Image 1 (cartoon, rainbow, N blue to C red):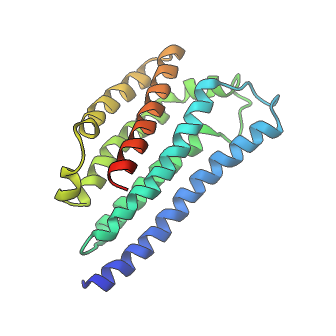
Image 2 (spheres, rainbow, N blue to C red):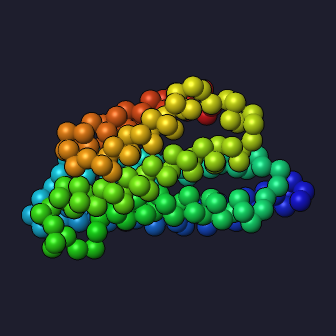
Length: 195
């Protein structure tokens, strides 16, 4: 596959990924708009709202970081399916934050805690998907990552496993604040050093 063809494939893949990511952002934005329109419909939750912010950032960062795929010299169907699958997992996280119906639950926090197994199972998977994505981008890209990037993978997996296990609200609040802090740091660090 020549460079022109590889670039054309990248554009096509980016459009499909963008569609899935756009659906995830739409779900989060519509859910947030619903909270503003009907604040009394269900009990709000700081934990839930912070995960909404974090997943919004995650979707935007995924879209931004995938631009580095433009440097791939060639493409195959396996890489395409992997990337679409990764985007679908991020969409699933967004969808899990805003269920179609909350009538079975005592608000968003109750829903989130009772469905944490699904949310954090998928969230934990994203750490492994991100590592695979980084490796697909090539050895120079991977080697440019710092130790904190490497360390966040096992730490994220362990924190997600604990979140699956415990319904403790303090733990869940600390986890989302930690994740938002890491996201803020990584935006500052990587956008400053890698552009």
